[in-house]
Image (cartoon, rainbow, N blue to C red; front, side, top):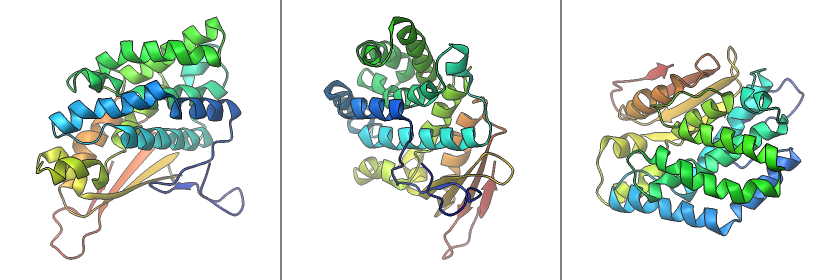
Length: 271
């Protein structure tokens, strides 16, 4: 899962777009199922219509989901390596391997409510995701486990919305990972169609995001931005999602302005 090489003390570093191999067999079976499922893949296409085509908002489709799911699992890996407790599966008497499955499923389905409306989409996502989970989970779990897994996945989906408070580490990971998809590629479509809102312009200013093992925290997120507009993504979106996630003490965020050709209003931000 790690990009690091050499001995076991090498720092874990995750590049922005690289795919990672996850060693857990159950997680890999679930990932194979959901990434080839016709209903889910149709939702990922359809949920982008309201967000992008009709509201000129940033991407909330298949690519966003792929990035969020990948970064959520990378966060999980780094936090586990740092000794952080994941209480969602544990308190439901599920297996440790189910922690990553909860995260993968929640990351995949957290935005399906966009097919109804962008506004309050987290609440629309719950009944839609519940129906999908009722079809998927019995493929991997017995009845009791399905009930418990469904509850944990839906909790994580709901709590990616800033108005709700995550009660599990798994839900906190989804909340933060959702905000980590912030690079300029996410705003390409609205930008090309003339969108110049603050979400679009600030996303255009972010050139890369990487996750790695921190020196004084389990996770350090490094963000490279080309101008001060990127501060909005870091301060108003990522910081807002980190606050209340339960992971404030576990994740350090460093944003650096890499543009050397202009006067820099903002050179460096640390959260």
